[in-house]
Amino acid sequence: MALQETAVTRRLQNVKHIILVLSGKGGVGKSSVSSQLALNLYTSSPTARVGILDVDLTGPSIPRMFGVDDKGVHQSSNGWVPVYADGSSARLAIMSVGLLLKNKGDSVVWRGPKKNGMIRQFLSDVRWGELDYLVIDTPTGTSDEHLSLMEHLAGVHSRLSAIIVTTPQAVALMDAMKCLSFTRAVNLPVLGLIENMSGYVCPCCGEISNVFSTGGGAEMARREELRFLGTLPVDTELVSVLDGGHDGSGDGTFGMLDRYSKTRSAKLFKDIVLKVC
Image (cartoon, rainbow, N blue to C red; front, side):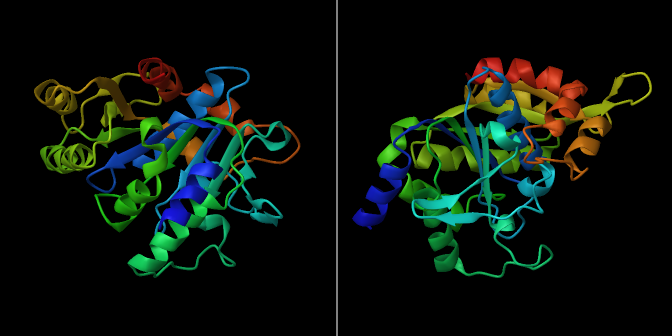
């Protein structure tokens, strides 16, 4: 194991910050938060270099959200070359098992040891290069994948932190508490809590209606002495951008970013990133 940790540490030696995005319950929009976090960190500086690693091995959605699910990962003499969502600018790198599948509709049916091996490869064999931020989109809950991550990232623990994503409903908040318990058990610093799907943005007038409830995330953050990063409503414009399968076209353009920047969610997420950076 010492050799594996050394390989990971060596590969990530030029990555300044590693942020794990966690959620205790499925369907809370964790991957959309991971995507928005990566996009906003990317635009935080004209020279910012960002990576996003999708370790949701059985349900990889990041390639589709960035419109690169038709791209493939290339093997070089120095490891796997990630796919760049921003084309020739090569400042936003993506790696996911979804980019390795021969047929995009194939299911990934793996037991723990194979998942562990793939996560190790993502960390030690991918040519990440110099990154200001590596965002890791994790599976729901706290499982083998999370333990593997913490094990393989032990050598860079000082650069690790986490963001917890929940929705306002009581059941989601209960599961978010389990995530928080996990971070405390493994001594993983938490940057804060995001309450996603907090209300619904009317596409016609922009008014936000609280379809479910609101305020639960802020209350949990206050009670547990966490930083509350903010609320994000259900935004149909954002859904359209992330579900559109649009480009990382390889010609230097980044059309997805242009479309995202016009959404209400982009404006709200800028405030969240200011609290994270």
